[in-house]
Length: 239
Image 1 (cartoon, helix red, strand yellow):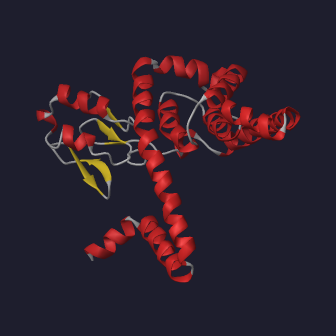
Image 2 (cartoon, rainbow, N blue to C red):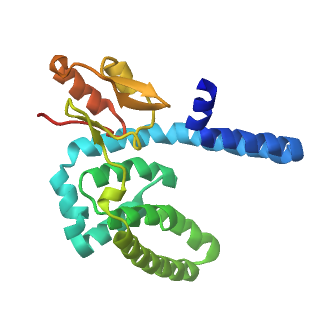
Image 3 (cartoon, one colour):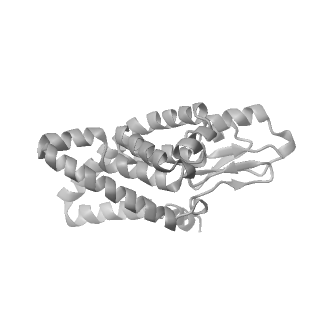
């Protein structure tokens, strides 16, 4: 049963491995090329993601929640939309680098619509991308494509914001000790376990809160653990 549970807990990874095995059996050259491409992207992630996590943690510490709500919250309106486009357009790195930052922004009060705009503009209208597009396809093509893309993003972000609510996004689950841990945001880095193993543990490659005596919690040590989390998945609220 343990093996079956492990397979269920890592179903996506198992399916990927099976897909590679099938490719190697049916078309070995395609399998070799796929492994090379996967290796390239894994190497890229290992180089980029630590930097993104550090920058996200710094922004989380330096920028107060009230500021995020004012600039990117629901009441920001046109100003928030413009800033969301700016943030996504000037950002660097692949789209998956945007996810930890967007988790932090939403946690601090950014609206779902502005989160969608940041992700969309990060993916398709980044400044470096536009410069290369103008170079290879011409300025006229780039400008027309940019205008139409911006219009599409505005429309679809509005529609998505009507369909999605804040409660639809993963939320932290509070424990009796006042701790909350968002397992959906957790990346399984194990920093919390290394920092405070009496309170945190890893199960299914994700962190979770252990059963422990809340009266003996070392609050200073816990706060240091919270600050160490690269995706801000841990929160402690005084009772």
